[in-house]
Image (tube, rainbow, N blue to C red; front, side):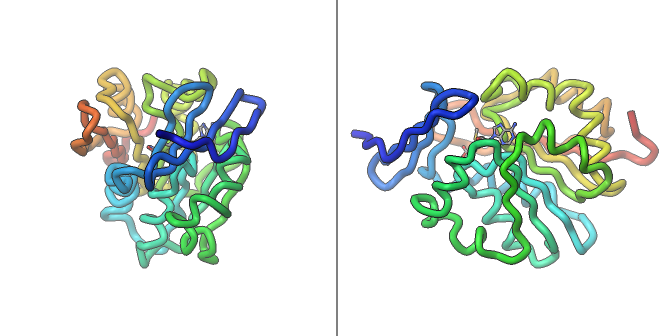
Length: 220
Ligand SMILES: C[S@@+](CC[C@H](N)C(=O)[O-])C[C@H]1O[C@@H](n2cnc3c(N)ncnc32)[C@H](O)[C@@H]1O
């Protein structure tokens, strides 16, 4: 039986925070968005896989704070000098100062971390060449976005913008609750090298993590 802890109306609709047993859950406009149950194995992998092989010191951008598992993973990495988290919902940021402290307290208070209340789609416009790893966890996947506007992040224009934000040897990782084959091909066209990681989850189809890096000379 889930208990509603808070409910906010935002410009994008309604976000609800619930507790079910020990797990915190967030529902946006009736769609299940995230839960602390399971410990965030694929969200942690999203960061670890992107950082693998990058040179220090690093600036990591996390698109979507969510339950905070990606942020926790980023601050664990000793070569990370700076973490910027862009989160569109003020309610989610507030809940990390209260209910989600069980997950992110140490990470949120880390001096390398800055949480920005903004829409990632807009924030990226002023970020050219500043980030070594972009970890995109703003949606349930490229084919299942939280709001229609986020779809542009995964199209050709969005990938061009994301590519412009990432330093030449940097990486882009993208979280998805399902395989996204067309997106994978697009990613390959823009970056050259794409790794796909899967993580088994209870609900059925595995979580997918796409990691893209530029092959030598590849730039669209
Ligand atoms: C789907 S949740 C992350 C789910 C995560 N994979 C999990 O299972 O815990 C997405 C997060 O990104 C945020 N978000 C969605 N669109 C965004 C945008 N355009 N800019 C910044 N944050 C965004 C949401 O408010 C939410 O906190």
